[in-house]
Amino acid sequence: MKPDIKICGLKTPEAIERAVRRGASHIGFIFFEKSPRNIEPDIAGALADAVRGTVKIVAVTVDADNDDLDEIVALLRPDILQLHGSESPDRVLTIKALYGLPVIKAFSVREAVDLEKIDPYIGIVDRFLFDAKPPAGSDLPGGNGVSFDWSVMGTLDGGVDYMLSGGLNKDNIAQALAITKAPGIDVSSGVESAPGVKDLKLIDAFFDAVAGATSPKTVAGS
Ligand SMILES: O=C(O)c1ccccc1N[C@@H]1O[C@H](COP(=O)(O)O)[C@@H](O)[C@H]1O
Image (cartoon, rainbow, N blue to C red):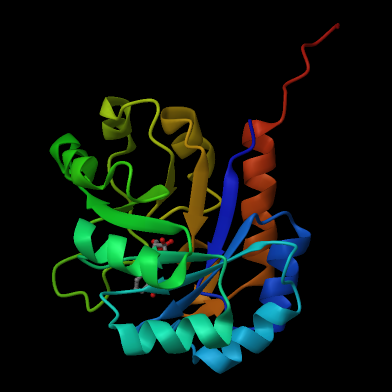
């Protein structure tokens, strides 16, 4: 089955148009100053207006305070908040009460035991997102273009809804889906020609690779 596909870190109308035309279910805007994908909320809001209602608009934040969230929610009008920091279950509950929006909570994963950290969030968040742990010295909690050992996902309870992320690209997405059967996938660096620069050909190639990995196979002679 085709997974939900989120293209994250978008900054241009061209990349947004291509992602949506190729079938993205979600598009993400990054609100984190240290990121090469950081965008101002008013600019993100204007870009999102072109596709609003045709794709889920996701605001990605990292331990944002209420003032920042107020501005992002007012100007972007996202459908979903992705919390990519170390937000506690209580903080997630507060954010959900304040804004009335679904929350995707990101967790960094290296080994199976890391997946146990989701337990206090079950029933609180709407979806999980599993990303690789940042490399040593990285300024970014996500968007590092590195993968984790996808076989650990086999230890996750089958009822948990999640997006797989971290270093996905046109060359590894088929294997990632074969191993995890992830219900959603999220890519940023893997569709870029340089940090923060989306590449339309790589976006196309990513969607082609997902289609190749998820289309029903015809059996010779049938
Ligand atoms: O992309 C960023 O710069 C970023 C910054 C801060 C928090 C999250 C960020 N991106 C998220 O990281 C993952 C994986 O990205 P990649 O494909 O490995 O580059 C994805 O969930 C983005 O939403």
